[in-house]
Amino acid sequence: MHLLLDSRRSQRGVTLIISMLMLVVIGIMSVAIMRNATSSDQVANNNRLQAQASQAAQMALRFCEDQLVLDATGKVPPIRPFDTSYNWVDKKNWTTGGGHMAYTLTANDVSGGTSNFPAVPPQCISEVSKDRTDVYIVTARGFSNDFRADASYATKSGAVVWLQSTVYMP
Image 1 (cartoon, helix red, strand yellow):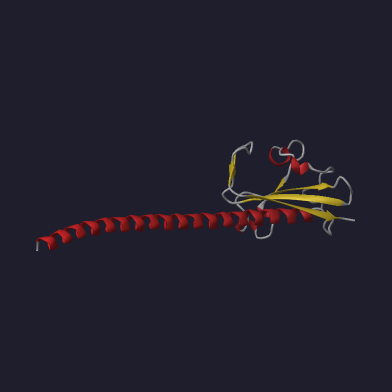
Image 2: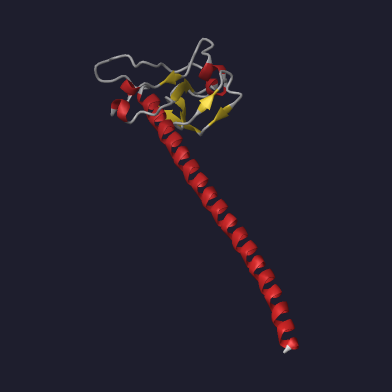
């Protein structure tokens, strides 16, 4: 009888240790699953912001391309192309102006008005190609709705998408 009690006592101690190990393993697995779910949410949000910025850049690109042609009434478009190339590379043309400045779209420039207009307005520049006067380079950039930048654009957050097209206008 004494031998039977000793074996039961030692088994109870082993059961406690195994139960504690199982709880630790379940806890670690729960943390890993929660971390994976949080990462998936962040990836989905980043994809959404990237798509927003891409749509805004496409809007600006199409607008700037349309401005290259005078409409049938002879109305002068609100933006005129730069007469030289590679102005889009110069940061001051996008931020401070420096004589020329990228055109910043307004809700009046696009159909749909303010309901579909991005929170951070997209911008575009058109310029004559350095090789041919009948070829234009159009560059646009669009931002996600959470885009923030300081005045020098040194610190920024959110998504930015740059698009460029070449338009032949004989």
